Image (cartoon, rainbow, N blue to C red):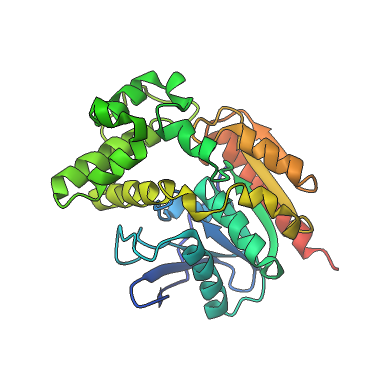
Length: 320
């Protein structure tokens, strides 16, 4: 099985103000003369980590990574004002133009797959191809699967669900995301942080195929934990700012582009049904269903993603 490429240091870092409020942190890695690719992280609100650079052959790819609005080193942190899918799509275009890139490949997993599809469908003439993982189409059934009491993930992870739901009084449990949002937006920093930690523990504990039902406390930075929970809840309560079934409805805009879909068969955050339906709507793309959960670092998913970026580089390097 393939593993990640060796660790790599960015050759350039910069900040880009995209409006009067938000400034983005941008990294460039690999070969400055290589095939451009933009990495779109998950969450929303997750930010990039050094391991994300390692899905790409550094000799062949010019890898652009950035922290989306409100997370990572982008500022202001945890900010949800002027933070929608349309804003993020516009940010990707602003980065592309700022860097002087005519066209680039797009790589995204989980929420990053949602954003990848939204961006590619809005700007198909700027995209060379797509590698997608852990498909999330932003539909109501997917949003409810993990975070609401009528979802199914609790049937698989009852221990984690019990802790997640215990944070909310029984009278408010009919709308868990709204109940969490009220706490994540509370004036009291202690209330916000406690809700963020409970939210993150549920999500983190459901992401891998092999996991600890009673994991130790997260070692993530408290501000990063708050950013993920706060921005996710903000997006989820607004149906991720997409129209119903938008990403499948508009798939014809990108069917001419090369695409690979990597999906963990036992993904409990983004169940395999969405990847299957995307592949049915986009038969030209290659679907690889692997024995894994949600995490990009589950070995079978890492293997498939590295093979996919290598194969896309081969395709794009061919004359014509």
